[in-house]
Image 1 (cartoon, one colour):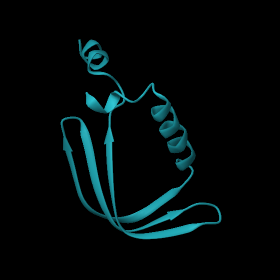
Image 2 (image 1 turned 180 degrees about the horizontal axis):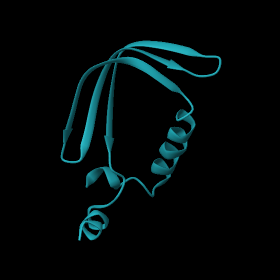
Image 3 (image 1 turned 90 degrees about the vertical axis):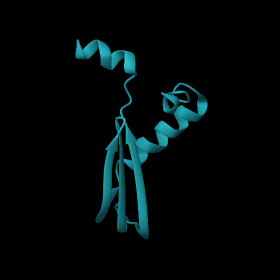
Length: 80
């Protein structure tokens, strides 16, 4: 899939490091919509608060798109 193209590049590694740091953030909000299509989850949340130890950020709306990091060939081998 196209979203895997950047994974082993400098950009991909930088994004992964940033995401690893963000894992320590707590996210609280109201779920507006969600969907699962073609192995991709999409969530839309309203009135969201991002909390870290000393910081709090409030936003009106957040869209989260999550997909499986495994390649299709790996998934197909596991399915057999």
